[in-house]
Length: 391
Image (cartoon, rainbow, N blue to C red; front, side):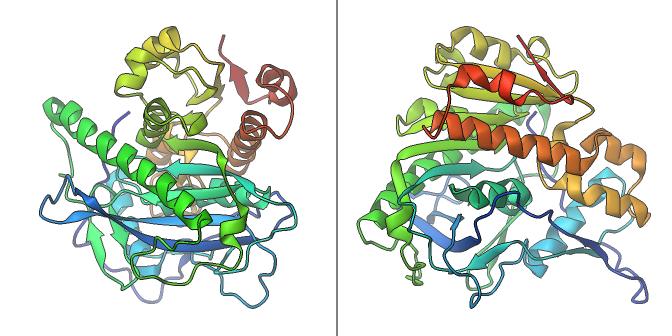
């Protein structure tokens, strides 16, 4: 479903004596240490669709298996500035104030040298839900990196609730806090075109990195050996909500993307009418079947490639990003009502939900990017009690 994130401009400050509500990312399940680098991307060939007077700019992060993380700092999950902005946006589900929200660091180490002993690694691109920064699926992303994938995450500027650039500049969303039903299609089309173009630009720049070039607008040094571990012949993509639709459309438009996953996102664009001829996986929330989402039903009928659809029991739309990890601590602190949270993240245990999703994402990309097995074996190999295979 296409959504936007309300930003509450003037949240009431919490009394200073109240303790912060600390949320910690679960440990990645893989054995490899994780490096990360944030890149400022500027596409001078393309005006920004939201601000046509300036070229398109956005932020990307590359998460990768690292050789040595002992002398490199840990990347924040989200910076304090971005956390405050996002905490304000949570007020839309009934929170009195969430400024006590404090996020522990990620497990990624900034600028750590890349591990080269296993050669080039498959690449997975990630696009978040509409209005969301790329940091809101860090639990999924760093888990894939801990299992040997390169994961490239995107923040889509002026649509994301906020995008923070290396100089500290923060560009907020220019979208209205609520979108009139008559404008949904038009806004979705603008967002989709920008997202797919962002994705394809990043794929070009990954090739540039392998050739020894640095795509960062500020020319900050890239991590040692990063160019040697990017396997640009093996690329997948996944996303949540509109990010899942972005993955499908980008794969439709760009043959370099070999496989894609949609986490509970309505599909948009020519990917729906034309279908896909490469592997695709849809994971939806409980009771969210293809017959109640016309774009899914049409896409399933037109797609000729291997495809799988699973439903995750007791899950809702926001169960497919890091918001599910934040909900329980905020409920316990009395900052958001349990009933409103359940509508957003369902009643599934968030750690169980995350574990299942991590397993399915990793196994799908292991299979489709050529590391083992065959896609037809996935249901028998993976089927979890909380997951239903939709025929």
